[in-house]
Length: 395
Ligand SMILES: Cc1ncc(COP(=O)(O)O)c(C=O)c1O
Image (cartoon, rainbow, N blue to C red; front, side, top):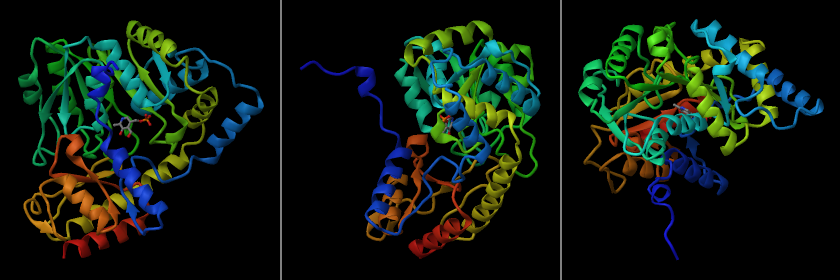
């Protein structure tokens, strides 16, 4: 039999999903395990959003929609972005898709030719690396360190640019680091992109989950020269606790949005009409639930940051946004824990799950094999119990 596609076979399974699957299996087997793997809010979708979806079904809004999404949703996206980030787009520049992940794939398909280099600061969200390969691009990783707050400098970006560089993927705030670029840092990155004629895919899906009264600055708010080379990615999954509804969106200059919409019209036709109506309500309806969820995340962030740093042999820096914290394993590498030599995060995550009964995500797939990621999108009680298990596990 002939082989499968070389590109498809080179794609690695998502480590986040793998740990989550192991954790779910252990739970199904009746074991007392706590999960910190999931990249989704533990809150339910707010009632008024669910009601809007039910209403859409009752009203028979259940047919194909335009490929780039219903007009009402594209308008609602523009209104929300203007209100939250002060940036103005027209509905024709919006492309709605089945989740931000799908928009990222479409954005890369739209920009990248085989052999083009795509710059990716590490630690990076695992899917970027694989998505770049899936479109025939070459990922070029820029390593950032804990000392620099896991934020790439403009000098690092400049040094990584070659004749083949086409795109920079900028995830701000970041999964997995939870860190956020300020306006000055963003502007210096933008200058390099303009000087070297790079496109930017700016994934800002965590922009509303920001702590300590920090001000989020959208990359596209830096001016027209930035906007004309940027595909902005966003979605309702994280902000509105709507991961299963599968609605994400991209905002881009007209000619790029048009190509993306053409592409998606053949790939999916459009995302679910019902989810689109729910997303209209999410973006236009009351926003109080969102603030309540954000505050709950901030309380958890404070707790996990403080308590984790009280436990000997592990440490973390304070996340500024999103709902992840990266725990450094530097002091544990090369040591033996419960009979297992800890060479990297994979070893640690496995034995911590098996013996400690806690699921965390090894950051090997994120470009940093000496860290594990804890998602604090879970109750404070779970966080307390998880850290208490970590303490017992290490002592
Ligand atoms: C940085 C980042 N971008 C995009 C996504 C995907 O979001 P969606 O559920 O809209 O596909 C995630 C989800 O984990 C993410 O962490």
